Image (cartoon, rainbow, N blue to C red):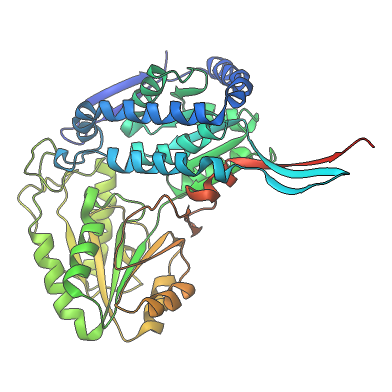
Length: 459
């Protein structure tokens, strides 16, 4: 009996979509076709590859009216937010704009005796394992630069957003990207691990859980296949004594609650200078109380259900444990909270780092707020975590933010903003957030390998 993958809609618990998984032999044959197509794709002029990728991106955009409600059904994001095409096209367009410079040969010498240079060459077959929380934007981070650099791409998307890979592949194929150059696949865990272990891929990019990242690295052990991982975070915000409180509260609460808190770089803990603590909490609570929890297909809904009941269960468990340990909850349970996927957004105070809600990833609409004496205490608390993706600093002093940023164990330092991915900067992390880097010039460096040429001229 063929195994199937099922997307369970958080709206009502129904099966929204299902697809059969590939068998091991079928998958191996498909990857072999992809590998065979790589040389011809890499031989095309870079400008042609860029134009095809941008055309594929535009074709995805043309589907946006269908994509937005489809995402609401699959993972619960309210339709009022209009999908992901803004960030999707921004990232692909930026990577296209820097490709020729980023991938240009490094010229060492060209004299009477020698021509010496370093060239960036594609890895070959790039395997992208994409997550459900921002299914289009996270996927394009790797797909666009990988294809532009001359790699071929195999995409395996999360079951929760089962239809995203199909849509992306269909869009790219419709504009002339060959089917064997960009292939969407449905695989189970065993087949995925087996393919990695057999060196079916030359580069693996995984975005997801720490457990998933470990499984990818175990599968690749001994193969020397590069594995890049982005595994989430417990990102802090620090509101200093000279911060703009209104801006800080509005941005940090949005960063904590948007997408029902299901953002890798969402704010999950906030530290506030003592003098502003009460005022900041008051503002944060007022903003959170104004959210409208409900069906994501309703334009009035500002916060939808979590993508899966088990994700909401974990958030509720962290909140309950914190309350039992002395934390204070500021938001009364919303009428629409069903005890399952629909979850009340929550602000907690009287929290500390003995509580899981301040140390472990919540990935839901809850944030704990603590007061701090000074920068030293804030830095110590921000670093007291197994993750390191982003940190958001709120101050009017750029130099102060830079000095504090130098001390924080994180991949990105924000000042007076949060929860944004700038494609000109490397998207990276440290500690249990994983390793590697996407986007920017560094993204191209990671999706290619250096090849040196030392050419002695005949005399």
